[in-house]
Image (cartoon, rainbow, N blue to C red; front, side, top):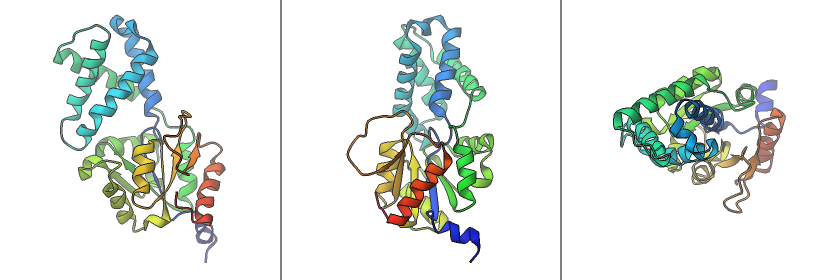
Length: 252
């Protein structure tokens, strides 16, 4: 047995990651883009940046899922978010004005993108010893572009997105699809993600071990014995958690 294969026995055969707010820093990119628009549009300054940011993320949570499984167009969902956010500031925008604001936001967002600190380095480190997959509620082309932007293509063995399958996390079928593509059983895989409901509860539904990536230090929704990370730094801490899950055969 080679040294690499011997080491690989210490890690799960497959480590699955969520993309947005686990590998790619969606929330803080969103906040930075909204800050730019707030400087450019006086009516947005009627509310604080923190209020606008929180409301936008909330609106995204309610309108995004239908867009990524084909029930509505993603552009339509984005336009609606900005129409509603402008309305919360006392501005009444037409559909055309809301769509233009949405496009401007998208331009700012693309220019300000960033990874989660340590995430690309972690994937590269783990990939030397195990297989890596991404399971995401989004469009295929958008997540493929993020993989290119982050420079992690060589580390990603499996990519499963909701728009491709027409189902979204926490539906257990999306996790089963990732396991099937990797040829790995649930007891040989771990899911790491920031969403308690989508990533932790969803992956547990198929018998996977899970790690909650909780960088905003949110309170636990319940008392499930789930491993938790607030940061990917130092990288060896993540490896230690994964090794502990394997050694103890702990199904969270």
